[in-house]
Image (spheres, rainbow, N blue to C red):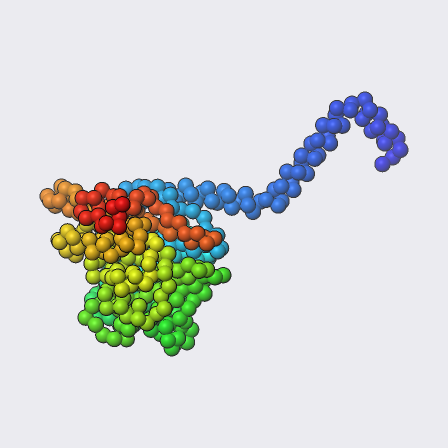
Length: 402
Ligand SMILES: [Zn+2]
């Protein structure tokens, strides 16, 4: 700067000290805002993204077809393991459990009917944003577990909606049904998928098949053994794939629709730990969740995937899901029992008669394992024993009445 110009600037500054202060303050603010944006642009972007997701999530449809909020939606961390028991968009009992382990997405079963793929993916897409399910498990060949994997003319199935990397399913079946044949065709047509049976995983007898899959730091999925992977039975349910998830020192057990004999074999063949969570055997049937199994695993939380009180399988009120026997078996271990859906009988004008509709009991149920603690969250967090349906249809066991 020329000496004359410098003198001019100094003279002007002395005449107008307020202007000098204003210029300095403006410069400091510009630098500070610039630095903040440079370093924080990612987190600001993430926060906005988060907000958008939360508002989108609040429009998920529930089983009764009505719009409901989805307060279970949350953002999970790299080290979190969460289990989501899903409502299936109709009044039919069936299973579909979505599991998120860090960035890994897992789906166990896709019941209950072919149109359930829509309800399942509406939920899963809140969390799985890359269109890829790293693991897909089909526990056994019944419609209420595999129907949603398959596409219909107007409704793409789970195999079509997602890239499924590893598919693990039952080793044996007696099924000769169209839904089973369609499942096999869709499974085998899944591009690039690795397919193993539970027995191949347990034995590690096929290249790439593993008994234990690591899901991240301290997280794993283990394929357990039970004899009906290789022994014929007339009870299709006993062919169910059984899985144990482990997160640090905590365990989570899934047995599909395994019945009494399968549960006995499971106990005999595995050193089962006590578990935080047990997915109720066979939708809370009186034929599963036996004390042989429960006395070993001593569950703290039990989630039942069913339409409570539906007469789909029986008109004997004591045996509709979740059955009185199931309630009596579970009660000594925990009262934290949650059920996805409950039946509602409504008059159908067109049919001119009463029909059963599914409405949310607990709705979609989330069990989150994070930082050594386990929490349950759902649309309505009433335990089974405190619901109107339970009070009207079940006898409260002694363990729950105190
Ligand atoms: Zn089932």
